[in-house]
Length: 611
Image 1 (tube, one colour):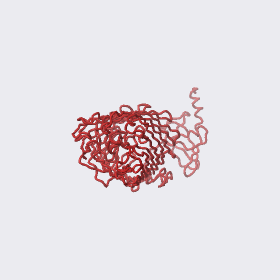
Image 2 (spheres, rainbow, N blue to C red; image 1 turned 180 degrees about the vertical axis):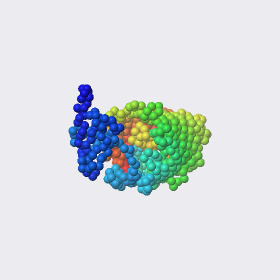
Image 3 (tube, one colour; image 1 turned 90 degrees about the vertical axis):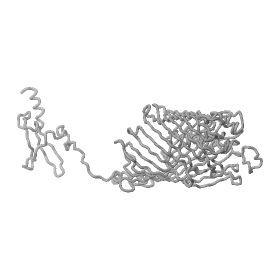
Image 4 (cartoon, one colour; image 1 turned 180 degrees about the horizontal axis):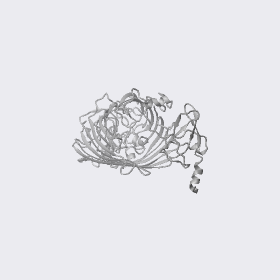
């Protein structure tokens, strides 16, 4: 025998093994001769390969498994014998309960109504009926306490303080607001990977507000009224139906339509329009959600004066908004979303004489000619939000063109041509985020010519440069001695000389706004964040302010707006958020000229609980 054949015979001489196999009924021994393939070829010993095996306690032959059956490697290696590895078999489908009840039956999750972190039917974790109907309940308690100092005029009819004969009175105020928001959402459809087929939202808000000031006639037009005001109001912030028209791809790109009172934000930071009007909206996605589109008609609702909530018991305003926007994700780079927008605002309230709930004239504004006007203005906008590598960037730009039947200061029609640009850059350094903000809104350099150049939005609510932590954005500072208007509206950054954001008309005869600021967010702990903002503000052009005040030589500098806030989330989530902020305006020469020796600060304590 050749050496190679002898070695092979020696190695394979141990192939007869005793193999122990466990079955469901008994334990048996199997003798198996390792041999050739199933076609009867000879093994290396020259003997025919066995075609069957026998159990010692039975005479019935047991057929050998096919030659490609799994081999017990443990038996060959001398380890404790175990069942051989079985061949893979395709998974067989079998009916099982739906995925929500299956989880419950396994005991992994229990339905706990009061615990939003366990399986909760009221949070849409399980159907309320059938297998595709869900209910989501959201409840929010929002509490605000706000002491502040705002320039306040002395009541011209009857000041209630001895010696109060000047223009400016006591400027100390405080406000308390308690809102309870209840949101009920009904969904029908398999919402795991696709939009729901039908969706209904209803969100009433219950508000109580209390205000106290030093000067009479600051809260109500009647000087006999108290310097304290307490009111309650119920507003309807959402009431809409959403219908899923169709899916247009296997990745669930879709077309849907939504009608009713619904939240609308035309850009990323709320510069142009962010409100809850009654509206009809067609929207959807394409190319695996890379393209998103919206077509919109909206009519603004009247607001309650003191709570700012929708007053559905009043006739909607004759103020319509038509808009179309298109989003492109990951353009021009991965992680950045770009948007193109066209919006048209048509206001036909020139014949209104509207007084707010406190008795003050809101339309037309008590400024200039004090006569009503209609206007149509089209906004062409480009916006972007995302990151370029480590650098986060938000940019926004608008061109406003249109026409108004009468100017605020000129009793003749005027064309509208105005511009706006804003940008905010930030970068994260471990637990610190640094920010730089810049904003420009054009001002009107001649309120008596044929073109209005002051930029104004439809209904702004900017999330920018500190937002409502900032003094200038948070507070509405009145233009005392220049009419019943504010320099900038509450929760607004634009110096637009409107009576209010809620009731007033857009005003394109305004001094414009410039802002440059720096800020930072510091995550001191996972629960605690410190946020700071240092903004410098200017008028873009002071001509309109000088005309309104009949006062020349007003500087553009408004001053430094310094603010800081502590935000504490004790459970590291949004279910409980406590915020304490302080803002101080260090007056510039322009503010000093308008409000000599006036202090300007605000303290804001806000507690929000969410279920």
